[in-house]
Length: 214
Image 1 (cartoon, rainbow, N blue to C red):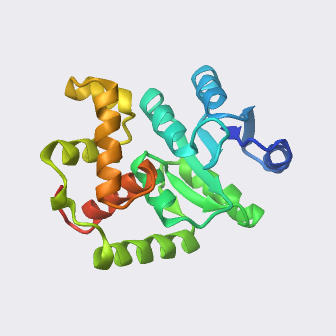
Image 2: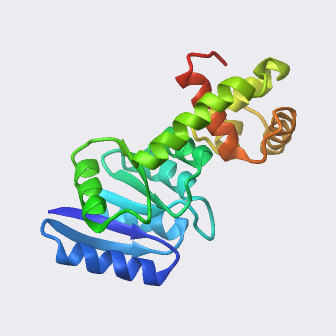
């Protein structure tokens, strides 16, 4: 029996997923959560085999929540479910430890198959998302920002962002004040013409996949 924690801020979506899993053999819905914080609490208490989680949550990103769950519960697999074909988010999800990233318009049978595969230890991406990620990587290779414009400290912090660390965790790792780290992050995002940490994490992942060095 594969136990699943459903994480989505829309109750109608959770109801639909719960109904689907309840009708399918071999699945048990261990619990539900509507926010990242609630997902962390439920995951720690229930220790599900798989967390099926929306990328967009009201209090934090599903990607950050995925990273936190994987740190606390390495045996629990996280499958990201989203309405958006977003190359940045897909790459960042994989960096954060997600076992898969699939789109919500997937057929019911394919979703059940994906959950089974993830529970068995298989990493997967929706084919449409995979194509988007590869296009994203190729485009980044042609037009991506130059990392050599960053200071040594900024490159170090960018690397840690790519590992999924928060500002507080980076500050502790580097023995810096959290405010100092925030300033470095703002600076490096501006230099690289990036809008947020998800794009920064995706850049790190892209650089690794293309054989680059930080």
